Image 1: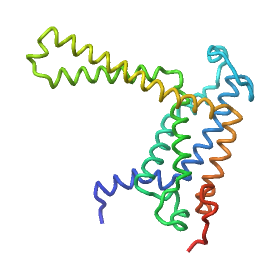
Image 2: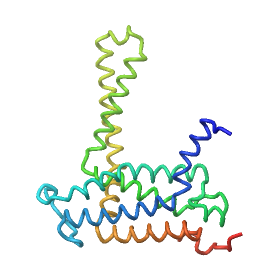
Image 3: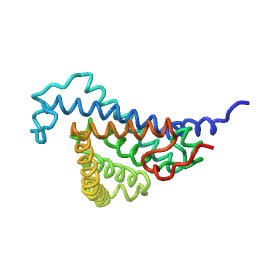
Length: 229
């Protein structure tokens, strides 16, 4: 029996949350690369402070750079697995499904979300995201106003300045708001990629992912383990 487009689409979007245990193990492997990347960049495992120009003075291997930027795609996948798994109430592995039924695991979901955000932001921490998003929001608003407002209004010189002012004001407001939220996320990203902490994150991801895949439970439900049916 041929599958419908909707069935194929649902199978694709649900595949990653159904394998969230594996996604978490991949996140642990990436955390190992953070450890190597930052150790190489800072020339020390426990170095706490470094100058911004260290990036220019110390060459990080191309292999570590490629792995770091691979985290962009993998980060999106982990965030996807986390969000879809929670929304659709999907068990993170077949063993978990057999033990607890079709229910999402809160700790695996949160872990995938946090590690995914760090993986996404790690190679692009230095980009001015707040300003870029604010600018895009302002330009998009101005373009929409030009498209949907009556032409008679657009031809008015005053209206042009009003549209420009609205776009500028919106860019500023969005930029200020995003600076706070993105700054918070980037701070978390920098902390978790600090080599000793990255090692702890990697071990945690391996343990949590391994438990979910092999035994069908995680660290978040150790007190609620029942024999498999």
